[in-house]
Image (cartoon, rainbow, N blue to C red):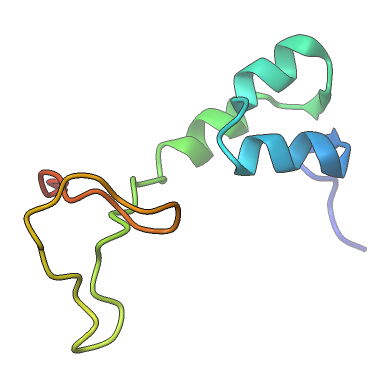
Length: 87
């Protein structure tokens, strides 16, 4: 039989979608009570330490790198070129 989870998080799908869309933070959802934690909350800190900011201009497939056109205004589904994220 599997051991008990270190942390269980409970959230409604609509509240999770707000986090995924960047409209609310995980911390804000916890503070509002929309996200309920049961167990060791320090697991979130450990998990967040493994996260990296993804550069949307990253070339996923060879030949798909976004070319800089000199414009700084992007369309609704385009990334605005900016400084490369150092890792």
